[in-house]
Figure 1 (cartoon, rainbow, N blue to C red):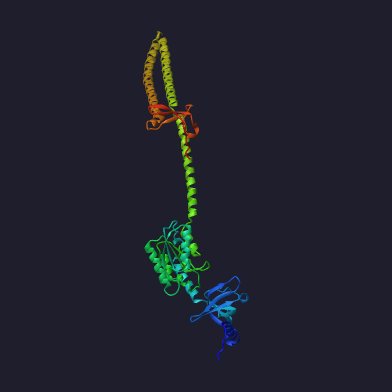
Figure 2 (tube, rainbow, N blue to C red):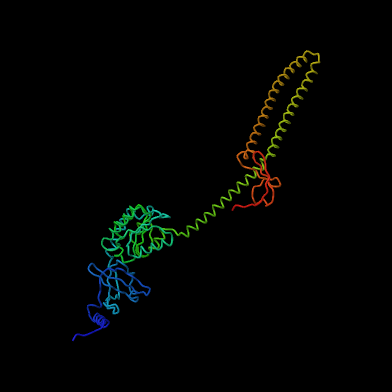
Length: 443
């Protein structure tokens, strides 16, 4: 009669079998580490694989303390331990008790060789990287249509600053993934998007390998629009990250790089508005002050006083010059007459000579004085014309008016007026009286 056992009993028997079989304990397993994860408990979980197969492995904290290096993906190792059954899950795994390195993984060597080649071509230089547009209208995304990446990007952009999202569905893992990613990048370039996000979630080196393929790296480099990479977790770095214009640790961070926060934009807009209003008010007050100063200097009364003063000064100079010439001529004439009355022939000759000199001097002085008077008269006319051109009455001819308060002074601000007061409004052809019924100050 066949025996009946529970699942737990069956798995327990297998566990006991593993422990009692010599070929399944105290053995060395040679392979390459993949999908390595270290938990906060200190235990490490990973896969040991070769070209034909793979096995799950665990190394507890106590065993990890006995090795002299940090294990990680793509490392070739020799692991010492035994095979065990995890009864609760019905799965077996290799319990690593010790470990030593035996070389570098094939994928890692391939990664480093391609990285060195592309770096030598200048594809990773910061000088060729382009800035991300501040206000993109359309954001292209190359990723799996069913993964968490597209969901995180849609949620983040909706929260920050809504933009149109154009998805180019792509296979992001396995055979044909690289070709699919390249096709998505080229498609979005033809569609004329403003920026492209290329990415996927976390995984092992093998899972992320499509983003280390040379065609993908060159497609990102050849993109006409900026590219943001978001591949794996923060600690994962692919060649796509090195060539992209920006690298984001997560899909949410990629979306935050692609769009700006609308709250921040509104705050900056408000700040700029306040600064603009302050600057405009400052300019207005400065111009008002200059107008008041010029208005005081060029008031009609002051201008007339200036013209009259210059006229008086010109008359005085003319009178003083004429008097000086007359006095000089009169004095010389008296001297000539005195000398002329003398009988000596020599003196008469001298008197005749002096008279001739006096006639010549007077002949030169008279035209000079006339020229001085003409010049002074011309300057007076020029000054009067300039003052007339600057007169506020010329402004009144263009439709403006001059407002004076009850004290007769110019009114430059509504703050200086009181409701019920009377003002005088001067226009081109007359003036009018007005009473203040209501006033309003502009902000």
